[in-house]
Amino acid sequence: MAIEPFPPLAFRPVDLDPEGVDFVVRGSEAPKLRDRVEFGGPLVTPIDASYRPEDADLQAFVRGQAGKLRFALAHLSINFPVSYPPPLTAASVQVTLADDGDTGQTVAYSLFPTHAGPGYDVTKGFTISPKLTVGPVGVELGDIDGSKAAHGTMDFVTGGPELSAHPAWTFGRVTGQDLRGATRLVMIIQVPVGRTGTLSVDLSAEVEMGRFRKCRIPLPGADGVNPAAVHF
Image (cartoon, rainbow, N blue to C red; front, side, top):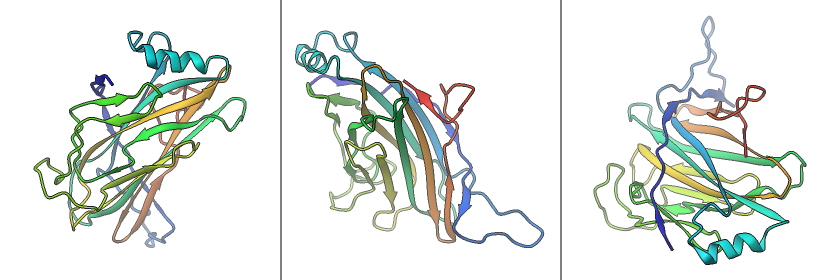
């Protein structure tokens, strides 16, 4: 399997609104969670005859689906840039996939990470198997700022499910560490031939005082009609 570099993604801050808890104080607005979550992407690339044409096995798989399904590669990223009280205790990236025919067949064919410890190495790129299973290169478990630690069984991030129109990545503190640093998220999407796919993103984060959320965040590359949906 060829090793491919991660394309660069520009982060942008997202203010999250309180959810499910009465934060309103008389005479003031409900607080937002600011400067704690940044999002990058999505960058969506078709997987077709022009994508790695030298990979005969991958191209054979794509041709075998011709007339039924087409595929696209999506890169996203989330960053927790600072750590100060109250600490983040959990976060999630929820992706919603659909198409203009409401077929129910536009889903996450494969994605990663599905399980990873804190600070897995995002500098080494990714791999795609001939059957379009996407995976990381050189995943390492360590602390958030990159120094190695003993391998453990606790996950900093879990992702899934595959073959779903609503895949998500969820993040949690590990061994008392706050959520901090960037994580690259990669997904291969299948779409029925002849249909236009759409991708939208919801973000949420939790602190000790409650849960904050932003539904359908604005996305670069979206059209003027719906700034929260990217078409591909």
